[in-house]
Image 1: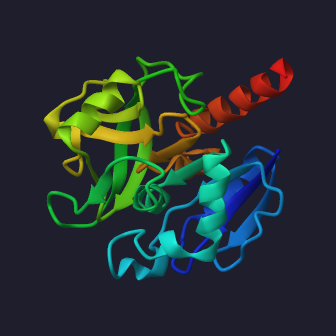
Image 2 (image 1 turned 180 degrees about the vertical axis):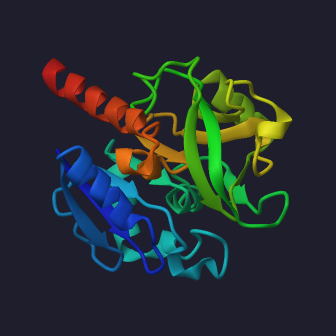
Length: 235
């Protein structure tokens, strides 16, 4: 499978993502410049973290109108898999490919540290192979990471098992104290109804190399690759 990593002005995790896909998992991967309109026959798209366009308006609000996003939106609406991480999650919400919005952290400060998240469903390519009782230590780095959606939207997300991850403590308990940014119901990641568009604030690509002494994020990528392989075999 060929993976594409979209690069915006201000992206700072694009090379991290390319490294993990290419060097850790031996996948074919190409960077996709934001002004281009060619997805280069990629079968899976990642929107990486960073500060697209300096986040001078709202995080992801300007990037959402980049030429490449017109193609990403078409790709997603046709069932193509798209995963947005941190700023990529913000862009997907701004593009209305995912419900809700990302707001300023409750403390109005940039937060950069390890967090713990726990899978909430098996109904996603990112979580299908994960142990729902096993918390994962994944880094976060954001100033606008507070996930918000109206009560009826949150209820729908819960009812449809579209909440993928919640912030928790190191024991897997979901508590107010383990919520780093004030996200509604500790939500750290969601997907759309069709389950092909996924967004999460924590950075699994920053926890996928043994040199970093943390490979908890590696299992998320492994879940994706396993699910893809199963779908190819079942065709």
